[in-house]
Image 1 (tube, rainbow, N blue to C red):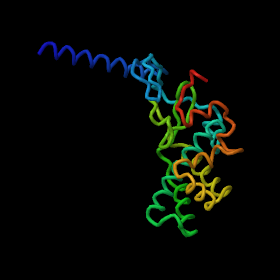
Image 2: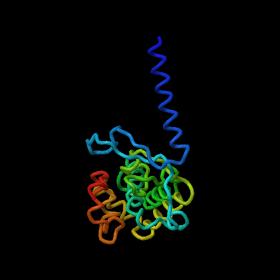
Image 3: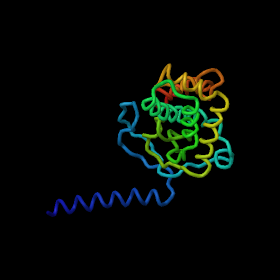
Length: 208
């Protein structure tokens, strides 16, 4: 009984220490837990327990900051895939133009409330469904201008590329619309060089 009580008190003290660090505004706390990525390394990593610090563009621009557009493009491609897959499962691949327009308009007009930014490996990254950064530990900063930026960027693709071409690309490779939308010449992921490998292999900032 005494041993159980001691361990409970010890765990409680550790929790108070961690909470004290977070409440005091400490930007980083070290952990020996495995970093949730494709890497099997068990070395000590540094994780953020505070909200990201935004520069002027990140905090005030109405548009998606340039360095986050690759992440945003891949997130939008993921959502388009999800919406198109659902409507194709229901009606088949030969959709009416009105069905296709309504589907992708609904996709782009969603709330985007699950998306925001977090600090990963010392770099600000977009995080949410369809992005590898979603599984990384960190404080997610959502709301604010981020949903509008995603909505605006998504509708921009509809106007620039068109619903029919997006659907055709989806049918050719249903699980990889991001390759067509983001990685083609002029796409938002086409100029990231070696860093763009993170889109498929995970984040390894210490290797970049």
